[in-house]
Amino acid sequence: MADTYVVAYERMLKGNQLTRRGRPIKQVAIVVHGTVKLVTSGDMVDRKTYEALVLGGVLAADDVPAVPEVLEADEPLEGDPPTT
Figure (cartoon, rainbow, N blue to C red):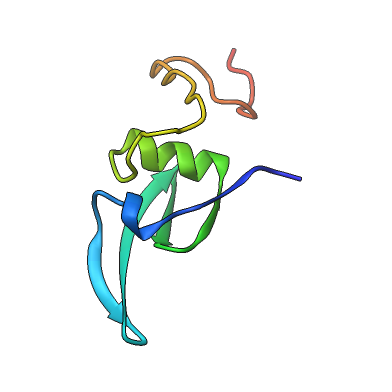
């Protein structure tokens, strides 16, 4: 099973603040490997999305699992077809 993480309202440093069902929430859109994802506080996200939120400064970096280094632009991403 893939790692999942809860996006806590208190840890979100960025995002639009809204009220839903009488409770405050935050929402932010973030791009993960070319796909735009809308993340709402309280959502469960996969590790790639969580890392993107941390690297984008959306989530506080306290007690965050190790985030791998950002790939250089000319390095292929995992799963990309080989270039010749």
